Image (cartoon, rainbow, N blue to C red; front, side):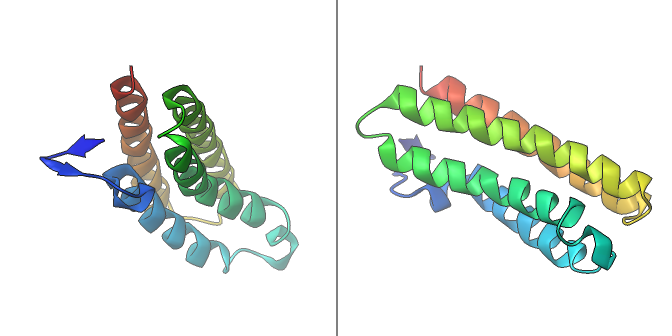
Length: 125
């Protein structure tokens, strides 16, 4: 896979992976402040789905040399996780665990990440 004239050897070198990773760290830190009752519910779901984007990219990328279709499937799963995160973020805002500013920032980030995933999947064809 080429990117700006250089070979990408690992998923973590993909720009979409890097962006998703940074936002998942922000989410992880923010959810630690959620109420105790939410630590094994909403906070956990939010942390897991945000991390699943990177995990699916990493697993799919590793299978890429053997099957582009398999990598595309993992990108689609990452897209699903991206949509899931957006849902949990909305819940967190509606329950007043995060601010409107945080909601808007995260939704904007995940909208960009989703678009990057769509483009990445499209580049495999």
